[in-house]
Every structure is written in C-alpha cells, then in structure tokens.
Length: 348
Ligand code: NAP
Image 1: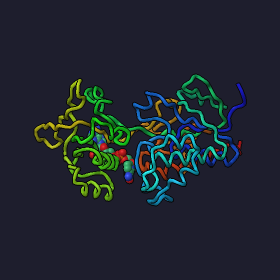
Image 2: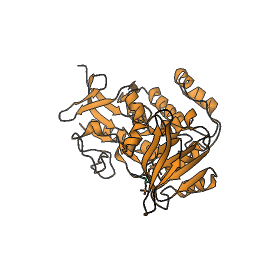
Image 3: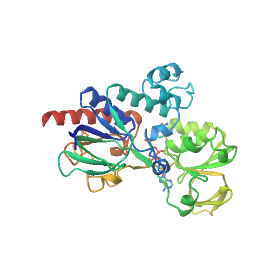
Image 4: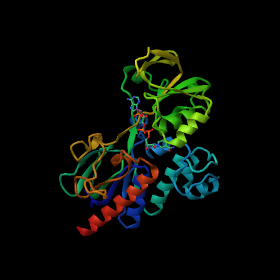
C-alpha cells in the first residue's frame, strides 16, 4: 500500500468542500470521497453534492443576492461540468450551482476527488483504514466525516410500493415529471422543507395540499407567509398519512388521511405524495466506530470543536448537526473541522 493520505474527507456538501478548500490551502492534499453515482444513492437521495443539489434557489447563503450569475458560472466552473448543469434561472444562486462552485473551488486548490462511497472504516488503529464502494482500501492520518443527512420516509408499505410511481421525497428532483403536471398533489410535513416543496410544486401542479399533523406549521415566519400567499396551496391541519392509494396502471391516485384529533378518516384524490418530514444522518457505515447521539448524529465530544470520539476523526455539517442544518453553518463547521484536523496533525 502507498503512503497514507494526510487527510480524507467523506462527503460532498458544503461542509465537505469547505473543509477541502481549507485543507488544500494548508498543503494537506485532501482526498475527497464525494459519493458514488448509483441507483441506491439516487433512491436514498444521497447522490454526490448532497441535499443542496436537490433544492432550487438558495436565498439565505451570504454573498449571493438575486441576480444573473450566468457569466460568472461560465467562467468559474470547468467546461464539462458546466455543460451538464441546468440553465441558470437568473434569480440568484441555486443549490446545484452553489455546490458546483464550491467543488470547483476545492479542485482549484489541489483537492483530489474519488466518486465512490466509503462503506467501511477501521478507526481502531492508526493510520485509519477506509474502504470504498469499489472495494479499494485507503489509509489516512486524519479523517473528516461530512456525509450529511437524507430525507425521511414514514415506512408505510403503500409508500414503499409507490416510490418512483408517485411517491417522492424530493419535489425539485421529481416535481416536473409528466405524472404530476396539472394534477393535485400532497406534501406531508410542516417545516421549511414542506413549504418549500409545496411552493415549488405549485409551479406545475393544479393544486397542492400541505398536510400537517398539527394545527401550526413549524416553518419560519417567512415560509409560513409564502404558503399563505400561494393560492394553489391548501393547508390540511391535524392529519397524517395512513395509506397511499393507487393502482399498477396509474401509480398514485390518492391518499387516506388519519385525523390526529379524533375526526373521521378522509380520502383525497392526488397524483403525487411528497414527504418532507425531516432527515436521518448518513452514519450507518460508522455504527460502533464513532459515538453517535440518540438520533444517530455524530457526537462532537469537545464543546465548540469538531472532534469526535476517535482522536484524529472530525465531523462537520449536517451529519453532526440536528439543530441548525443550514448550508452556511455546514460550510462553517467544515472550515472548523479542517482547522482542527490541521492543528491535530501538526501537533503529532
Ligand atoms: P423539520 O424542520 O424537522 O420539519 C419536519 C416536519 O415534519 C415537522 O413539521 C414535523 O412535524 C413533521 N414530521 C416529522 N415526522 C413526522 C411524521 N412521522 N409524520 C408526520 N409529520 C412528521 O425539517 P425540514 O423542514 O426538513 O427542515 C430542516 C432544516 O432545514 C430546518 O432548520 C429548516 O429551517 C431548514 N430549511 C430551510 C429552508 C429555507 O429556509 N428555505 C428550506 C428547507 C429547510 P412537527 O412540526 O409536528 O414536529
């Protein structure tokens, strides 16, 4: 086996790329595992570039007020990647654009990238060993885990049955499909994601029911107002999804809704069901290798630092954050993890 890497970064969202930028500029020659482009990752919404790649405009990332970024994107992003990107919508930076920009920035400082998942780790001895999805094992002095989180499903058999035939957890990925056009749709959840998904879907749907299990949205005031201002959104309070209805020919045709306040069940005719009920951190491959929280997020073991339960392994972004979960906080903790790793390596 060749010399161990100085630092391996696992992930490809804002935390991973920001830590790569800082590590590269500190001459640590980072190697990033950005994730595999596989059907399994597509179904789990864990393709490279993370959750931001599944969103539309990013209106709250500092430095990108609304405007036309076409010329900048053409100049900043390598030609081949740029060719495959959706046309710029001239409303400020989009999630996929932001991720391509920050990935390119990491490459510009010498980051190397492997488009595979890390499927197993051995942190019991140093240097650490990491096994990729193509079966190759890599050694590294330090590791930053920035694998983010993925959208949750309810786990109903009917939901599973109609996945890809009308059930989705990503409006931006699937909302423009012909099966949803000019049809009534239902979004489940009461957070910012649910409102964002419902709002997005109204661009092509006939109407969108936003179904929430309580009588008050969890979403921010701004997003609550956005839902209220959209005449195509109808909020259904105090209801949960009991069953996705459908048939083999048409896929989803409706939903059976249970009341959370003792009212009778209802059925709604909809052609699509979009889940926006929170996230699960991508830590399955770390089970028993690093300390996790009750909700399976990575545990930062030193207050205000990105250290994990294994010295030399650091965590950044949503994989270690079930509270803020913003692109900018993920980027910030990516910077912290790279600085923590750099100092740890220097001290050894
Ligand atoms: P979230 O804030 O955790 O909201 C999840 C929603 O799903 C809650 O309303 C919750 O209901 C509901 N829920 C959870 N489990 C459920 C179940 N089993 N059945 C029915 N409903 C269920 O998650 P999020 O909306 O994905 O947002 C995550 C973070 O990203 C937040 O910090 C958010 O601010 C941020 N974000 C921001 C934007 C933006 O600013 N544009 C867009 C997207 C996300 P309860 O309310 O009853 O718990």
